[in-house]
Length: 238
Image (tube, rainbow, N blue to C red; front, side):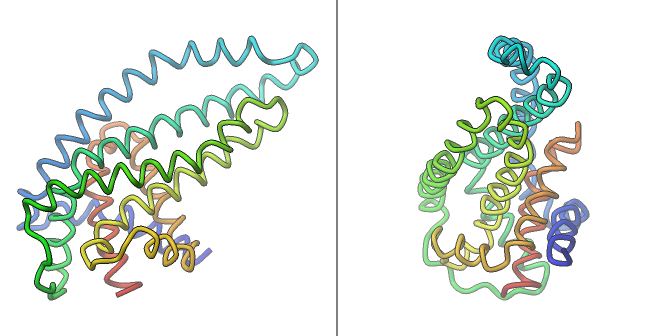
């Protein structure tokens, strides 16, 4: 639990980094992308939520009517987490090259001396979105069992907790990729590293998930998470 608490603190601590001198120009584009994507996500989630709840109620057996008070809010929570995680990944696909630059700048402000980059900024602009799409494919494979569980009566009562854990893990992997990727570490190696520090990773991801679900605060969640992930790497891993 101490690792979880530390990871959670790094996520929220990233908000304070955004005020530091020298970071503003690296924060602007991720901030704009996040505002646009989460504004769209909020509109679509509200629009589709009533359809989802209607679909759920139509498939709930009559003999489980007495469990509606429990299953319905849990299913709604699972739906919202799934939507928010999906749109977070989409936002990162769009802003990934700029998030990498932000991570480098945060590391420099924290006193880290970066090695000579092996790729140019132009190459990063082309390859970063491709890497994000690869991660999205990996996350989609993890989500398939959860989607199956979510539509099975009774069993789906546990789906909300599993979606929360899934969301925390996806966001940890997503944002830790920026400092770790800047060091040349591949996606598989990153996941193996984070599995060894599972509590720390899940705590960080849970903190990011919380930021993405708080109105207004969610607009700053992306650059804050990149900053927090970079500090976590410097203090816990590097």
